[in-house]
Length: 212
Ligand code: O7M
Image 1 (cartoon, rainbow, N blue to C red):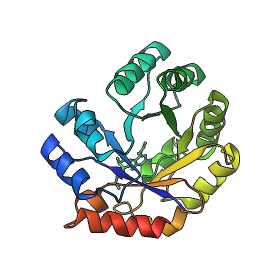
Image 2 (cartoon, helix red, strand yellow):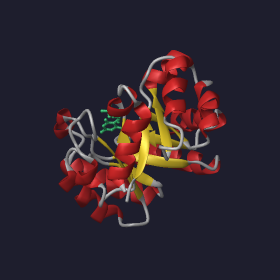
Image 3 (cartoon, helix red, strand yellow):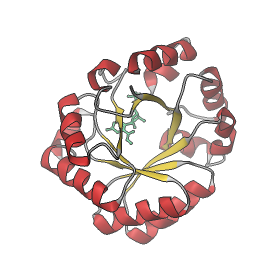
């Protein structure tokens, strides 16, 4: 049984609020990232807070420890409940993000293996497994692993164990189905298949039911 996270990669406040409002009651969290925040500013977090579900900032943080901490301050200061970081900058950068998240009462998720074909160049295989071990050692709350490669997500689950969560993108527009990964993960991340749907609420409802 997996939660449903909406990847709200739309542009502008009006469209973001339209989709979020339409999906009221069908989502467990909303993931925002560069497409939306660069078009609206972080004030969008307050606008989306009316949906009363956690807002997770997918900034795929990847910098030196001090800069990572400063990014976390802004994200949690704006009202986000969680942040998503990369791990490839190393254990000190990752620790800064995890620790700053926890200092602000938030959660930190770590990208380990990505869902797109190009992930096979770097963000997969042994590299992903090393990053999963690093995420666990850092005390992260969870990892990101691909619905498009469920067998890899299953492998990463064996590395992190059951005390950490896995959120999994790739369902819908990238071709994966909720049934492919729901037994390995705590949440599926769905973007275009919901926010581009003629009826986003109905689409969200169907994904939520199929993820259960
Ligand atoms: O369902 P989509 O394909 O329209 O959107 C998927 C969302 O998940 C989109 O916000 C991507 O940036 C994100 N994502 C991936 O698609 N693949 C990954 O490997 C990782 C992410 C992600 O959310 O990383 C935190």
